[in-house]
Amino acid sequence: GARAKNIGLSARALTDHDDLGGVVRFASAARELSFDAIIGAELTLEDDSHLILLAEDVQGYKNLCHLISHARSNCMRGSPRVSYAKLSERTQGLIALSGCPHGKIPSALALGDYAEAKKTVFQFQELFADRFYLELWNHHLHQESVIGGQLIDLARDLAVPYVVTNNVHYSTPEKRIIHDVLTCLRHEVTLANAGRRLRPNASWYLKSADEMAHLWRHYPDGIKNTLVVAQRCQFR
Image (cartoon, rainbow, N blue to C red; front, side, top):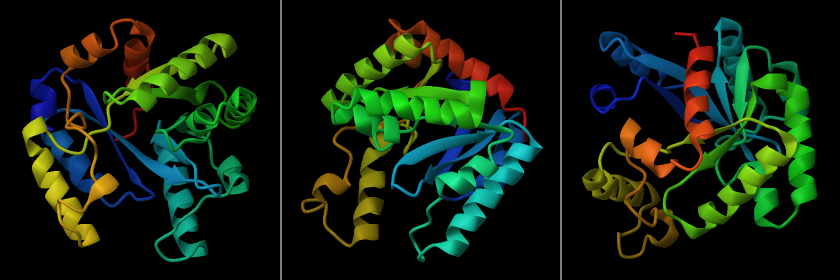
């Protein structure tokens, strides 16, 4: 949190997978630093796709808690899933981002199915109205670059707002090795044998506002919309 404030970020969002366990510690640390803490989660839907949800207000937070609790109590242990029917009941007060490459829309684009991607955009717009954004990312991977270009085309084609994100797993590039060792311990493998369990480079660190602005200098709307989303998410 302190480093985020020092490098020019005005807000951060916590979006753990199907979990809100870290939000109290996250919010408390942010409050001490007078820093905006956006509460969210990366939900796994019934088709195994991922969707980011961020709480705009207290009703959104209640709905997010309900979705996660329902998923954990109605699915096999360790594999929480949210049905589209349940999601449709609990969208009030929530902003949705189309998710990482495991999102339904990026996955469709990766398979060359532009029609399915468009259909899914309309599906999420029906659920979230103007609270749905396409999500873009750049961790210097070729696949991300290709899909990112297609997401931009989709955004322009359908006049859908898009936002750029930065998936943070460690504070600085030098901390990557600590993250890799912890990943190996979790999977009970060695660094040499970890393979694709480890991320392919050290780009998953907390980038500064200036770094993000430079990285996305050709797509300023994606940067501007990060501030729009942050301003909309007033729940603390």
